[in-house]
Structures are given as structure tokens and as C-alpha cells.
Image 1: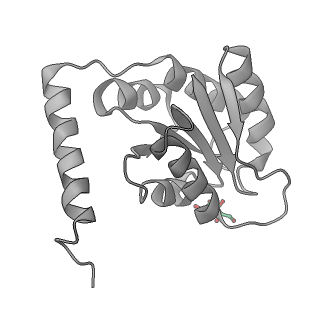
Image 2: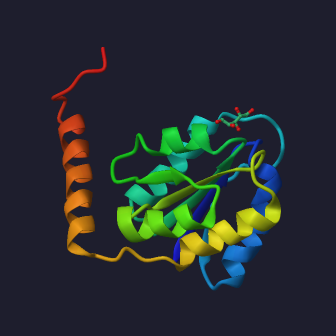
Length: 156
Ligand code: RB5
């Protein structure tokens, strides 16, 4: 698969090891930065990661920030993105199998390197099951997204 990999400065300490693992598993990496520990803004990287998936430049994305939260919130604003913060391997594979999660978000200040790599491997090894109940629930998610984008609801 083509995997977009992005992070802010909080996620940067994990980025190289994640990239190494993703490449070693035979995936192609679309590197979205950042490339140093200089402070940047996580919404910029959540947006690039979300867009990479939404525009099909990548099949999935892995996004890293300090907690995983900010970058997941940003990525989830992009239509077609289903991003989840997963700090355990069960969520990382079940999120794909049941929810068709296409963006994995990790907090480099929360999980250590060894666990983070196991989570990434679980995410990349999982496939959506296409079971009827999961397809139905995914359809409901897509309907929420369609209605939100239609301007039917206002957050004001
Ligand atoms: C950066 O200090 C930090 O706020 C960011 O990486 C992330 O944890 C936000 O959710």
C-alpha cells in the first residue's frame, strides 16, 4: 500500500522508526513531514494526512503528534477520512476490520517505540471485513458526513 506518514514536533521522535517499519513491510511511504523537532502546528499535518487519503494519493495514513488527539481531530475534518487514536493493538486492527479506519494516529508522548511499532503493524495488516453489519454502519457514517457537508447542520 501507499502510506502517508506525517507528524508534528510532538510526534517527530517516533517518525523514523515508524517509517523504517512501514518500508520493511513492503509499503511505499508518502512523507508529509515534519522533519525536525522544531515546533509546528498539528492541524497542518492532520490536514495533509487527511487529504492524502481523501484524494487517494495514499491508501492509508499514519499521523503522529504528542497525544495523537489533535492530529486525529484535524484529519477527521477531511471528507472520507476515518481517523482513530489507537494506543493498543486491538483497536488498531479492529478499527480497520469493523470501521474501515483509514488513518492511524499515535501519541509519541503516550506510547513507547516498541508498542507503537506493534500498533502500526496491526493497523497495516488489517483489512475491512465487508460483513453486512459493518457495511451498514459504515454507510451510516458516510451519511452523517454527507449531511454535514451539505450544510444541513450548523455548529454556530
Ligand atoms: C504539541 O505540543 C502538542 O500539543 C501536539 O503534539 C498534540 O499532542 C496535540 O494533540
